[in-house]
Image 1 (cartoon, one colour):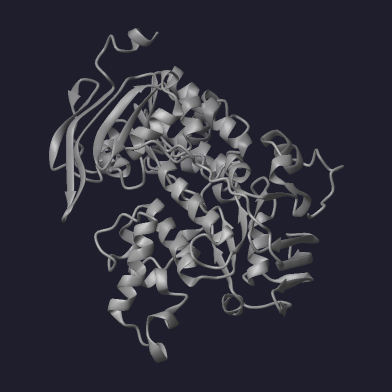
Image 2: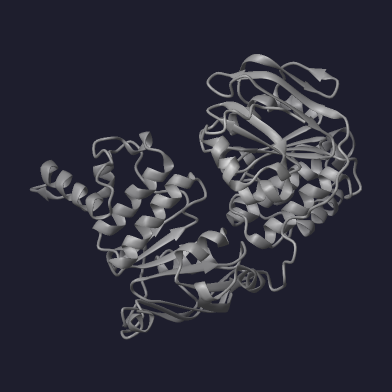
Length: 514
């Protein structure tokens, strides 16, 4: 089967692709070949050039040099619509659906069957149903507005739109970052169907376990260059990681023996408008406490209620000597910092510079009487930019110009710069590559045990990635339907038992906070 795949010219061939933005060389001679009927993983650290390369394929950028072929014919799209008409379908992490339109309207958006300018609704419904049925998604409600669908089903609608447009290549950019495990399995089934129909699928993900499961071959980019490729099943994950980061990453999760200090955050019976429901826990200095659970279980609402972003109907919160409800500004003053899972809308001021975002919560450290000494600001910010390996041209660069992973690092740097006592982290490594994850894990561990030269911090961390919780946390609690149903030392959990508790099948193990 594999040899037969290459009897004809590759579906896509990109040779010596280069692209520069000002003084930044984003791509420098990248090569990529993808066959029809293949799932090809494109991996690399944030800023490696993956997004730039795909935007060239999609017609959003023109390369400075290089050549492309599609099914053996020269290919150089003039704009995104040109690329789409020739069979390139891009499905980004942030979907490009019309949320107020129905499922069927989104599937045929721009290619609606019409006569004399009037949409033929019966024909539209038939074509949308046929596209969904072909993908095994006939149960999706055609007339429902897509904003009423969960993220996983919205993604299916976008893929159906790509199929009905006769796409030859489907590019999936971080497709599972906001999906439940059930939706991930449904997506993988769909990707295999696309492959079996002869489409070429380019799969971009930082989750290398997923890459190993779903892809046939892979290509690694590093610093804008192709540094390796191969058959996925024949290449162990550590070797792919070494290609990505240019070195061996021997210890992804830093395991340290920490001495738990006094309780610094105590939550009793916390109840929000809908979630959480009667949630209680105790968090100590020198402790990393992780919260597992399914999407929609109430984990984010729990952290937001503690920080004062969401209203509280009942319960009590104590932070050190402070007790009761508080605004987010008061929580900062009490020594609590919050990292939102939505960095674009809540985590960052994207129009401000990198330096301004990092220092935004502690401008008092930059000069007397509210003054900001630029030299002092740059010295203090440069330390965190270096420690987190934030890829940027300079510290005054607008934050919106950074890749998503580097934006996430800026949001984290702000918390570390503020030197708070309690870190509330909601999906802290979402959209971050494996090399950067290792850095983030080390910084979180150092913050908790005080080895970074500060007093030990307390970390309350939400993550949907179970290996991350098991590898980094001292204690793990599980939230199910808004309730904290179990809390035990991390070594007493496995991925299997965490999923059982998250799905409500482990109710006999009631919460017992150590």
